[in-house]
Image 1 (cartoon, rainbow, N blue to C red):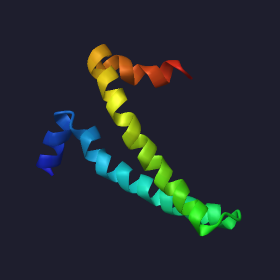
Image 2 (image 1 turned 60 degrees about the horizontal axis):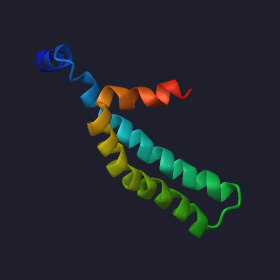
Image 3 (image 1 turned 180 degrees about the horizontal axis):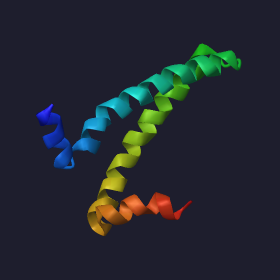
Length: 84
């Protein structure tokens, strides 16, 4: 238990949540497939829908990384908040 407290005291708590959040996102994709099939989408359409999301994410990673290096990570994290 003291190991967990030490990690949380060192502000590593959010890093420990990343695998958990990743698992939830994976579950969301499986439910999304079922929902699309229930709405009448074909299996091909539902499969393409789940493939396109990660592919677009990979395509956007490099430009976002370049902007993050150029303008700073804090500013890049604030961009979505300012757009709301």
